[in-house]
Amino acid sequence: MNKRELAAELAERLEIDKKQALAFIDELQTTITDTVAGGEPVILSGFAKFV
Image (cartoon, rainbow, N blue to C red; front, top):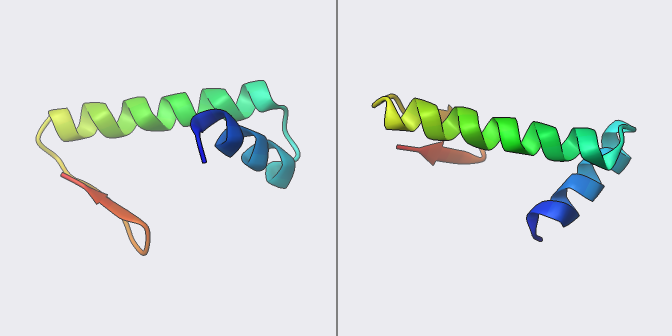
C-alpha cells in the first residue's frame, strides 16, 4: 500500500476527503521525523517504534 492508497483508505474509514487524509499523513510523518531527529523516540504500541 502506498501513501495515496493509505490516504484513500483513511478517507473512507474516517469519512473525510482524501486531501485531508493526505495532510494528516504528511503531518504525522513530519512530526515523527522531527521528534526522532531531536533525539526522542516515537513509540506507537502494537504498531511501530521509531528511534
